[in-house]
Amino acid sequence: MIKVLRTIGALFASLVTVFVLLIAVEGFSAVVHPFPEGMDMHSQEEMCAHVANYPQWVLAVVVPMWGAIALVGTWLAQWIGNWISSTIVGVLLLLAVAFNVSMLPYPIWFKVIILLVVPAASVLGGWLGRGKARVKSEADVIPTESR
Image (cartoon, rainbow, N blue to C red; front, side, top):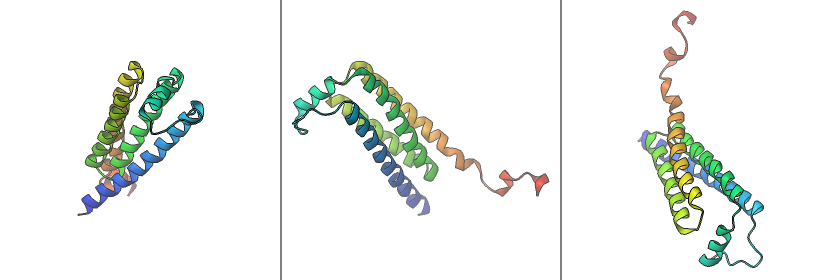
């Protein structure tokens, strides 16, 4: 039961962290490439036109930001919970990115790179988050001669 609660807590904490970081990335994007005055945010055509006009440098900066989000999110999920929570966060992020790039007219280089960076960063984050599992007891931390 503790393992289930820990997994759920890890999912909650990491997804909240991911959402906060995503809002920061979207805020950055809105500052450097603001929406035009009077744009209908619910219009698919207007949104596609806006995305098609993204400066290439903005997209190049967003790729490592998304990678950092995936790394931090999966690291936190693994560190608090386990590989299940880390995997769920990584898959959710990959699905979100895949859905985003399939719906909007990003350049092909961006679509390919972001779909490689997010899973790679997710795997790395999950792997790095395993650090807590390496320390099993006090005997593993304090050498025998020091006790």
